[in-house]
Amino acid sequence: MVDVIVEQSEWAEHWWPAPAKLNLMLNIIGQREDGYHELQTVFQIIAMSDWLNIMPTDNADISLSCSSPDIQVSDNLVTKAAQLLKQQSGTKSGAHITLKKILPMGAGLGGGSSDAATTLVVLNEVWKLGYSVEQLATIGLELGADVPVFVHGFSAWAEGVGEKVTPITLPEKWFVVVNSAYHCSTKEVFAHKHLTRDNSAITIRDFLDGQENNSCLPVVREMSQELDDVYRKFSKFSNVYLTGTGASMFAKCDTRQEAVSLSDRLPVDWSKWIVKGVNKSPLQKSLKQFFNRVNQV
View: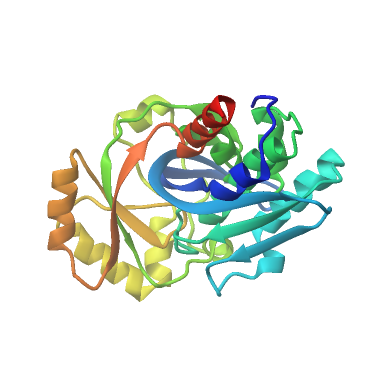
């Protein structure tokens, strides 16, 4: 971002957000010969994040510690992102990364992809590599189709396997997000025999005019009785949408008060959050604030 000297203590004190996303629509329009699906989707960034602390080290090692015992440190997208960036750049630098896991895994909220994107963006600054956003997004695509949108850091219309990203300004609504304990496997959803893979393509205007279906919803409901029950109960109070391939579902509200009221009517034992949609990632804001502060020291 800027060529300034950042003290070790500055990196040590700063935590970087890795925000979640919702898929406001997901339309599968084909399947490629390599097995990947051609899709159209709309990503909305939401103000709910994992958090990473990224420290440069005196050696070339990449190490990771995580607050969640369920995450395999050696086989994690954060570690893979750091190692891939190190390999691509040829840097001799290393880093120790601490991941504070807030977003549930397998929830369709993009937690792992966002963690990887924050790792790429921040290490680009820590190691002073000078990569552009477009270059980082290309590197991120090797880690997963959702990584580029988090690298770009804005709500977007996406096509292809999710890598063709067009910025889109969305109403910054409030959402009630409900997450089931059921872990949806993206691989299993996309391999399901009842998944419709040849929907007609739509346009951004079609989406803005109300075409907001998720092609994966019928399959996810078929795969899990638990998720089907959540969908039916949730639907009694609002229109309900599935994000990604699940397992989280959400409702849209115009105000925080409306979202609170809806959340209060849902079962008390559900895992649920009230979150705001945003058009720009808090990571970009955090980077700007960080370097502004460093420059003033």
